[in-house]
Length: 212
Image 1: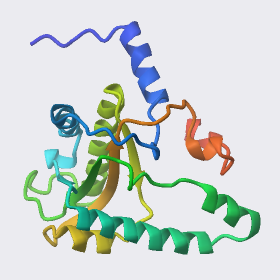
Image 2: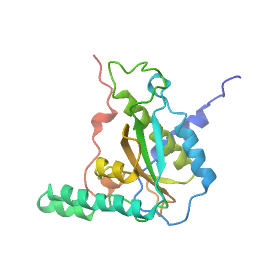
Image 3: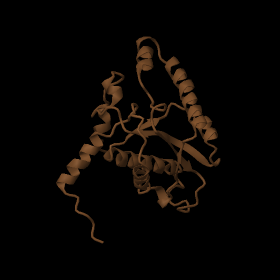
């Protein structure tokens, strides 16, 4: 099979997709089409992985009691995080909307299977963390595929990973890497929410290329 021709017009569209990929916290309650969700998961499965191990394990959290337990974990962890700031910074933190757990129609937990035999350990003997990094790559692929289909994704990290893992009753070798909210966004912006609401300015060092 001949490779496709990714021309300049395609590259420009791809750059636009990257620019408009945002962490979404405000969702419409409309249910997501199952076929669209599956297409996003298929894109995730095309991500690169160390030794072709494909260690990602996605769990859709639909049970109301489990969802409430995750929301409770967020509430506890968010309160602890807020207590770590003082004065105006603490007030600004409490004013931020940091998760769409209550509104998002789909909750998706991404785990790393630390005991997968796929790949036979290739490439991770000296850097075992690359197994979890592979899951992060799959999350990014899912995120971009979702954005291209008009679906917003929010990554919720203000959670107790041990508590969430226990609530979801997954195998002990599975380590939580990402807890994602998916749904149609209420609003769209080209800039990150934390910049837009004055939490921080962009750090330009990430755009630098250092030479050695």
